[in-house]
Length: 612
Image (tube, rainbow, N blue to C red):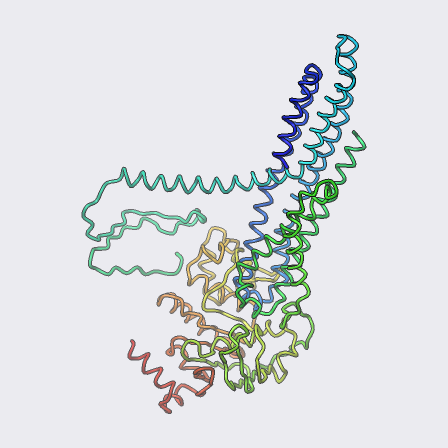
């Protein structure tokens, strides 16, 4: 459309000059009004698009963070909190869309006003030239020249929405080219360093740090390494130890028309994105196990489908009856709309936003797995639990589950958190079928600490008090102290207001795990679920975290602990130890009794001892 407009304008002006060059030159004096308007409009749209892209990027980061850590979000009842966070990020995009719509309305109204100016100037100037200079040109030539310029101005008006798209694309391309240039600069610097650097022909393997200081770029106020002097000789093993982390009417009409479409379109798109985000959070965990619903696909759906709908509901709809060029986008928009309605109409097997069901009041700590069979919906041919029978009759017990990888240990925890429902059999909580209980009430009784600690791009305080608002800082400090992380946090320049970065990237593994433990303790759970909480750590951090967990379990005798263990030496004092094999609970007793039987558990302990 833009190319067509340019060609029409060039040829039209050529014909006008041929018919009456004097009048055409006078009319060309009006072109700065159009050019200045287009320039201001393009610059404004480009600026707003950059702001919009930043906001969309933040919203997409939130969506990716949530759906890649969905089990953690659900276990902490954080769905409503994340919905509000996502909605806040989208607010900026709606405001930018409205401002762009206002700008398009002003620009379109300005172009319509220019039409009347062209009529006025053209007929007045043509009449004057005919009268004063006795030009031989006919009235027909004057009308033809005026109509050519009117037509060219109309073409520019029709192209206004496409000019907006061009400005948006230019703004988006700016960020891409900046990234490419930065990468090229970095590569050139590396090549220059390589070419100009000293060529070493003999590397013997010695490594020496001489008075080295270092800070991470994202935490410049925290010095990670201070005056490090270290020599690592070739052929030797050097170990590093230390604590973790160190026309007026026409003008108004056109303005209102395009502004109204922009406002309604942006609001509709925002509502669709938020409702989609909310509907996705309602779905059962099994829904996200399917390849077509993985984290990347879901985030793409939120981003691209929302944009496709906006193309159909924004300012282009205002000229739908004037130009059919948008029909090429209609199929994409309708497909996206169909996808959204499909999701809105889907009834999840487990509604994570449900408020129905019996509230779990005064939880007594009774948990019973009664002949439970379970298969994952995406692997229906593999039975993960077979006639699983486990009974916890009173609060304060410490139960450990051990077994080879894939034996069903972590599945037990996922059933307790009701990420999935049992395939056959029944899971009772205080004698009530878990499916009859309010899902938020059930999850509030459990505190989950997973193998990989999940932190969100928030402050340390917000991570510990995740999904809770207006929390006294003393409660956060109390939880952090129990998790043995308060001293480290207190020594940071910003303390509990320190941002942890995406996925806790600014912290070490041990620090992240202790903050995750503090988050679980902050909720004062009746049952602490430890899913191989130390298996991904080095021995130093593992020892620290293991000591923290043992102190927690001994300091609160009324708190039940269910432990998925990877080191058998850490569970010998448990009240019950269950051994799983291919989904069957083949042994369940105390450590001493299981050792006396000299069966599966005894063989596992013997293998661990030999490995040491």
